[in-house]
Length: 249
Ligand code: SF4
Image (cartoon, rainbow, N blue to C red):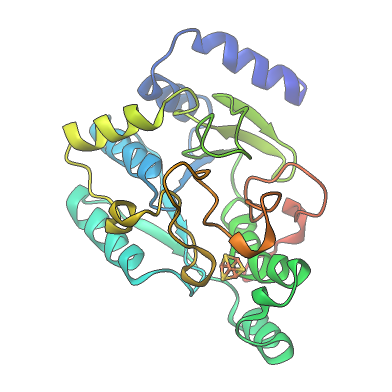
């Protein structure tokens, strides 16, 4: 079966499925070969709550770039304790970070778009590729309309860069439905969301947004509107394919 057929077959099976149904189908379809990548954002917290409530055998992991907000570290800890789960953390390779910082400086991301992408590659993308080495599918909290760069999110997609299926159970959720779920289920969330941060990444690369601004306008804001993605969910050229990552990279 070809990759597009796999995606079409899964989409056809889904029909009018709920987010919980999408999760359950994905776990059933890829037993032991699927994991959930959480950045601890609101949507990811909803998915963690659903995974626990449905007792799904779906490992959860996150990427610690070394530059996260203190509030995000607290949330990792609170979430693990609240739900009794392990949120496995992938770190960047120490030698790669040391080499990059020695050569380009600790705040290289301010120097140029290329330097910023290099930092994201070392601190995020290569660790993600390492996390994906044994997987056939990964789950994300992407939603349609989650900023200008995320206008067409499907429940099931083929991820060309990771060369595997990508599952977005909240693809058709609205910001309001996410907030309603968080409140109704008392889901722990990052207090920065209440201070104007709809999207939270690394501390030096995220600012609060003003009312009416794009949800991702606070990410790498100095680069302009065309650069709101770090490459984890980027479909264009220049991102790092799966085979680039090796254990320990
Ligand atoms: Fe580096 Fe900023 Fe990318 Fe984090 S978001 S990995 S600090 S460039």
